[in-house]
Image 1: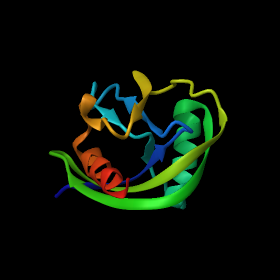
Image 2: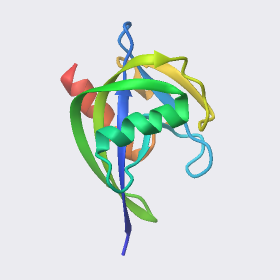
Image 3: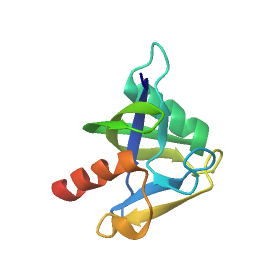
Image 4: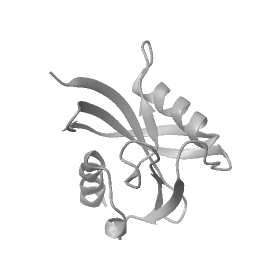
Length: 129
């Protein structure tokens, strides 16, 4: 039986229409993902997303719009990921948990190797564009 992990991810966009992506350290190292993290007991996914981005990037975001939920089976666990469109309110995007980060144009999202669960989010964003 898989462990089920609930996470929230943010598609943080800037004025130039680019999205913030982060390169993982540790498990699944080197793959790119949208910032976010685990939802803790008593938290909504939106609250978890704001907290995780503050903890990992020292940046405050607003959660603007629900995008989708991704259900994905990794070999060791099942992930249920609520994804939201977000905007930066304040902060300097300081890397505290990731190897690196960059602003990626939505028109060319395949220039990086994504976490498998995040590929569905890219497809949804391209569909919406």
